Image (tube, rainbow, N blue to C red; front, side, top):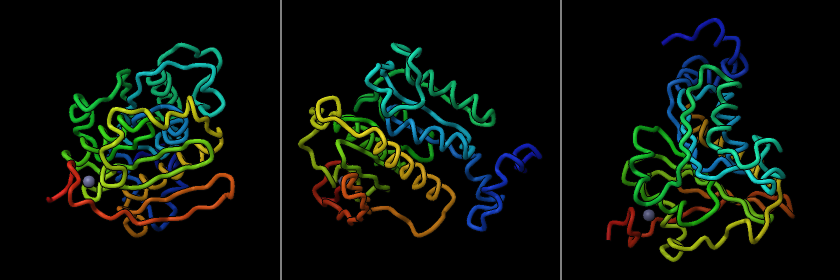
Amino acid sequence: MNLSDEELKRYARHIVLPQVGGSGQRKLNSARIAVVGAGGIGSAVIPALAGAGIGELTIIDSDVVELSNLHRQPLYRESDERRSKAEIAAHFVKQLNRFVEPRPVHERITAENAVDLLSGHHLVIDGSDNFATRLAVSDAGVSLDLPLVSAAAVQFQGQVGLFRSCPCYRCFVGDAFDSDDCDNCAELGVLGALTATVGSFAALLAINAIVGIGEDQASKLHLFDGERLEWRTIRIPPDHHCRACGSA
Ligand SMILES: [Zn+2]
């Protein structure tokens, strides 16, 4: 599939990069990515992926816009209050890049429907705000052999990592949180600009993984401290007793 003149112009700043080029741009154009959560992290991820020309973008979020979202979710405006985030985000994508096919899913992703909603994608980015959703998305990703970029931000702390089958996200957090929205930022708070930082990092991880830029980042977790303004990276060991990916 060759790029049209219009696409060559649109993606010129990508194509000129030796690490991307025309072939990397075509990989982006034919990629299907699911974004879980069109909140603070999604508000950074979705425009970055739409601008990059990801071929198909599924946006899964059951929420409607609330006034308390606006400090960290620049996809939405005051006049969007009580409207579906997935629908507005999809409309934003279409207006930014008509070569991207957005698929809004105004539904909560759960352990019951995650495999159905995520199958057929090349990668999933999870920017949801609770452990039950993150674990449901991770387990579905393991069973579908779907790479997962997991991103989270609460208060001043951010974390983002790429998981390919094993170790999975469940290896990292264990089983304690399946039914518990224990770090929901509604109670704990979150700095608005932090979600954008973490979301942009997540989009970069996803784009690099699709194109094949740099060394593979799987099994590493990148942690950001928004007070000290420092990143550090830890390695996640596989949990052989993990009930999603373990061999035991
Ligand atoms: Zn695991």
